[in-house]
Length: 462
Image (cartoon, rainbow, N blue to C red):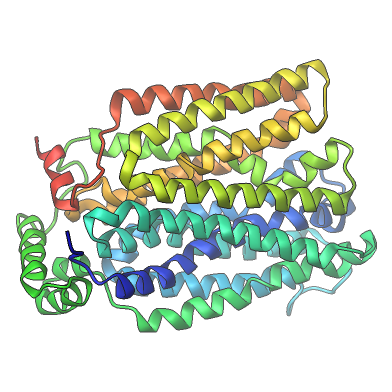
C-alpha cells in the first residue's frame, strides 16, 4: 500500500517542533550539573538548609506549572506556532539570566537573599517556556501528523527531550572535566546555564519556516489555509479534502465547548496519566543523578560520566518506544514499563534498607530509567496529544500538563527531605506508584493505536 502522506515535509516540520522538546530536556536537566555549585554559592553561604536547596533546584517547575496552565489560553489565542516561538524567547532569556543573575542589580561574588530570589526568578521564567513547550509541542505534532505515524512522531518529541538531557550531560561534563571545584563553583555553573541560549535561538528562528496546524486553522475558520497545509502533508488532494471535512465536522458542532463537554472521564484519565508519569520518581533520578552516584562513593567527574551513560540508556530505550508504539500499541508499552519501573525502584529500596551501595544499585537505576523511557516517557505525551477532542484540546492539554508539572514539583522538591527521613521509604514509595500506574492503565485507559483524532473523539461521544 502506497503512502498517503509526504514523509519529507512532515519529518521536516516535526524536526523543528521537536527542538522545543530538546530545550525542554536541556532546561530541566542543566541543573543536575550545577546544583552543587548553586548550593555552595547561594544556599550554604546564606546558611539555608535542605528545604531551600530542594526548592531552588525545583524552582523552574513553578514556571512549568504556570506555563502548562496558560498553554491552553495561549495556544488558542496565539496559535500553536506562535506559542512555540514565545517559548523559544523565554528559553533564550532565561539561559542568559540564570547564568548571570547579578545582571544590573547585584554584585558578582557577593551572595544575598535577593540574588537567590533573582536566580529563582530566571529559572521560573525559563520554566514557563518549558511548561508551554511541553504542552504545545506534542499538540502541534499530533495535529500535523497522519494517524498511522502519529504515535511515532509524537514519540520523537520525547526522544528530543531525552536527547536534550543527554546533550546537556555532555556539556556539563565537558565544562567540569579537569577543572577545580573552586572554578566550577565560580564560573563553570554559569557556562552550563548560558549554553542553552544557542539551541533556544535556533528554535525561535526555525519556527518562522513551519506552518500553523490545519486543525487550529480550521478551529479559527481559516479552512482555505488549513486545506493548503493538508495538501502539503498529503500526497492526494482528495485525501486532504476528506481530512478537512472530518476536522470541520468536529469543530463546527459548537464554537465554545466547555471542558466537560465529553464527560469527566477523559479529563480525569489525562490528569492521572500526567500525575503517574511523575509520581514514579523519574525526575528525582534525572535531576539528582550526579549526587546519587556520588553517594555511592563515585568521584564528581566520574559521577557526571555515569550520568552520561544513563543518558545514553535513556536515548536507546526511547528509540525502542518510537519503533514499537504504532505496532504494539500504547497500553501494552505502558503496563510493561510500569512493571519494569516497579522492579527497579523496589530493588533500590531493598538495597538501601540493607545498606548496600554498589554497582548493583546502578544496574537497578538503569532498569528503572530504561523501563520509563520505553513507556511512560514518550507514551504519556502521545496520549496527551491525541486523547482529547478537537474543540477542548487546548484547554484539556493545559490542565493535564499543569497537573504533570505540579506533580513533578511536589516529587522533586520533597526528595531531599524524604531522603533525610528514610531512603528506603522514598524509593519504596516510587515503586508503589509504579504498581498503581499499571493497574490504572489496565482498567481505565483506552487503546488509540491507528485511530485518527476524530475517531478517538467518538470514544468519548459514546
